[in-house]
Length: 116
Image 1 (spheres, rainbow, N blue to C red):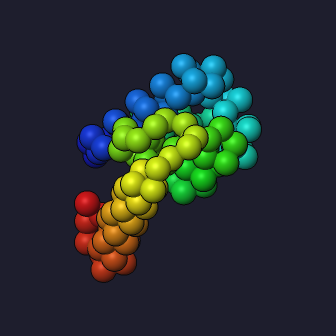
Image 2 (cartoon, rainbow, N blue to C red):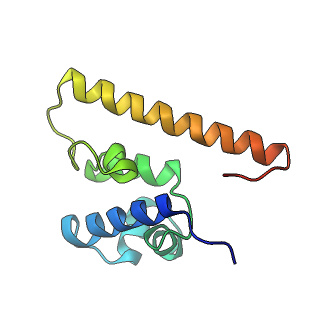
C-alpha cells in the first residue's frame, strides 16, 4: 500500500476540525448534507487516504461558508465574511496554483507516469 500524501493528511485534519468543532456533525450527517452517498468519502478525506474533490470543496463553501483556501492550505479566514480585495486575490492565486498542480498530475497520469 502506498504511503499517504502528507498534504492530504494535513487537509484531512482541517476537514475533521471543521466538521467536529465548527459544524458539530458526525461524518454520516456531513456526507448526507453535502450529497455524498455515505460517510466513506468523508472518512477517507479526514485520514488523508483520498485527495479532496471539487464537489466537496464547493459544497462546503456553498452550504457552510467554509473557505476553500482554509481547507486546502490552512490560510485565510476559515469562514466566509467580508474580505478585502487582497484576500480575494490571494485566494484566487491559491486556487490557480491548485489547478496547476492537478493539471500537471492529470497530464502525468494520462502519459502513464506517476501522479506526484
